[in-house]
Amino acid sequence: MSWTPPVHVLLSPITADDESQIEQLPLKPLFYAAQKDALARAGDDEDEQFFELAKLATGLSTKELDQLKRPDYVSIAQYVHDMSTRPASYFLDDPQADPDQVQLLQPLSVAGRSLTSLTLEMPVLRATKAMKKLKTAKERAEFITAHCTGLMIPDLGLLSVPDWTQLQVRIDDFLNKPADYFRSATSK
Image 1 (cartoon, one colour):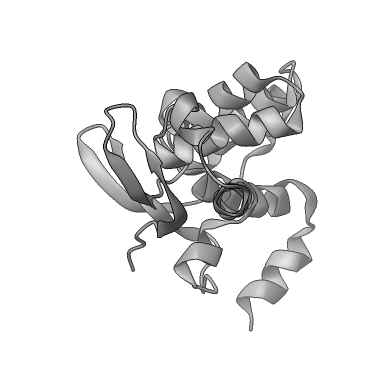
Image 2 (spheres, rainbow, N blue to C red; image 1 turned 30 degrees about the vertical axis):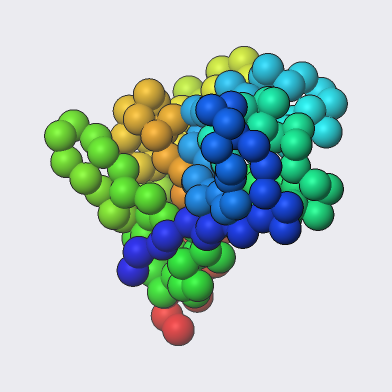
């Protein structure tokens, strides 16, 4: 099952930096590392965060983005919001039959191979103890995600944000649900 990012047809065309007319914007997926960098650049201002993420999602420059009419920007902001908060299954329209076999929204190129899904493993206690010693929530999330997926921490930055979100939902189950939760989920 593959996903193609949508194309936003502008209500009002804008002028590109090269003086050509832009009438539609092929939107791009947001990736974990790029989103993290954009949010760091934007600081705590929510409007500035959306603006930085809109630049990533559209590929437009600041000058080009500033020309958008408000309804076009609102549509792009909605896409950015969905990309930032929804799991991959939302975009794939997939109820995720096996929650431990995560279908990726965007293929992941790792160690010379292209992955379209990841198999999650429950973390061992030793890993959760090591995770708790890390300073920030982001470091802890990256550490345990690498442990549960078998990926290296730098590879996590290549995940689309919805793929990251999908993984976090299941890893949260691993960290916080009792054994009976998993028994009842597999016996249905």
